[in-house]
Structures are given as C-alpha cells and as structure tokens.
Image (cartoon, rainbow, N blue to C red; front, side):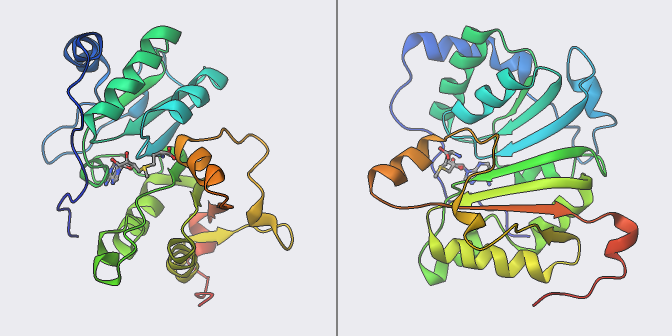
Length: 237
Ligand SMILES: C[S@@+](CC[C@H](N)C(=O)[O-])C[C@H]1O[C@@H](n2cnc3c(N)ncnc32)[C@H](O)[C@@H]1O
C-alpha cells in the first residue's frame, strides 16, 4: 500500500493555549502503537473498558468525534488526524467537555490499521475525506482495495462503515470499490435513501461548508457481512 502523505500536517501557528494542550493533554490520550506489532486489547487503551470501540478517520477539527463521544459515553472512540491544528482543536473539546472516552492517533490512519486487532471496531466513520479530484491523484484516496481489506479485518461482523461526501466522483468511486468487496453490504432502504443522513447523524464542519455552497452530500452506510456468510458471496460489480 502506498502510505505516502500528501495532505497538510500543520497550518497557522497554534495559539499558546492550544500549543499547551498538544504538549500536555495529547501525550496522555495519544493511542500508542507498538512498533511493528498489534495492540492486544483496545479496551485497555481506555480508563474504563468501553462497551464498543468506534473509529473516525480524518476527524478534522474533532466536532463530530467529540459530539459522538458526548452522546455515547459508554463507547470508546479512536480518532485519527495528522493535521496538528485539527488535533489541537479536538483537544480543546476533549478538555472542555471532560471527555475520557477519546483516544487520538495524530498521524495517517493507514499507519495504525495494521496494529488494530481483528474484529475490534464496531463502527467506522470516514466523513468528507479528501476527494483528490484529479484523475492522476485518485490513488491517494483513502478508499481503496487495500484499506477495505483492512477495514474488513478490523471491523466486527455487522459493524457499520459510514461514509459521506459532497464529491460525486468520490461517491461513485467508493460505491464501486465497496460493492466489489465481498465483505460489505450496502443497506439501502429506498430510492433517495443516500440523500438523507442516518437518524443519529451529527453534522460535520465540511458538510456545513457543502450546504453553504448549495451542494447536497451523499451518505452511504455499509455493513460488514458476518464472516461465515461473506465467504459465500459473489461481487455485486
Ligand atoms: C476534508 S477534511 C474533513 C474533516 C471532517 N471529517 C469533516 O467532515 O469536517 C479531511 C480530513 O481528513 C484528514 N485526512 C486525510 N487523509 C488522512 C489519513 N490518511 N488519515 C487520517 N486523516 C486523514 C485531513 O487531514 C483532513 O483533516
């Protein structure tokens, strides 16, 4: 897998308060990954064993991650984001709300996928991921055969992979990649279903930006097929 990083790692200089959080709070809640190894139990990464662990890749400023963590205090959340200004913004929310159920991996998510245990994740969010619109950059997209293989390995049977985007080419690309993968099923309840966010949806910053531009995002919910059933499936595409 090509894990070169093409995005931004930092933006404007952090304000002193945020810089202090990066230096003091982040080391306490950073997800530590054994070099070349696999984390034994995700429950041990949290102060209280969570009922389930959900993963958000590319949390931006952490608004969605923090809101989910507030709404589900019994769930442990792992958020991945290499952009330090986004991480700092998420840390302000963690501190302000006293959220103890968030762990942060402040790097490229693809670098921890290998370290996550099999069937350990109950929900995976990939929301408004960078679309890399130029054809020659498509290979940089997070959704790929390799990452889907990893998602399939680390997601529990029946776990949800939630994807949203306002970039129609990325939506088509994702549908094509996921429907070709035997481990996932797309649950559509009717025409136009993908135009409506799921009932427990929390608006993200990039989604709000899309609305301001007058664009309508697409919401896709895929489910990890039970491992035994997936073995008998044929690709839909
Ligand atoms: C367009 S922003 C969307 C942020 C947020 N999800 C939202 O909807 O407001 C995409 C984010 O994904 C992050 N990102 C891109 N590639 C990533 C990767 N491989 N691992 C983790 N985060 C990534 C970027 O740094 C950026 O913050």
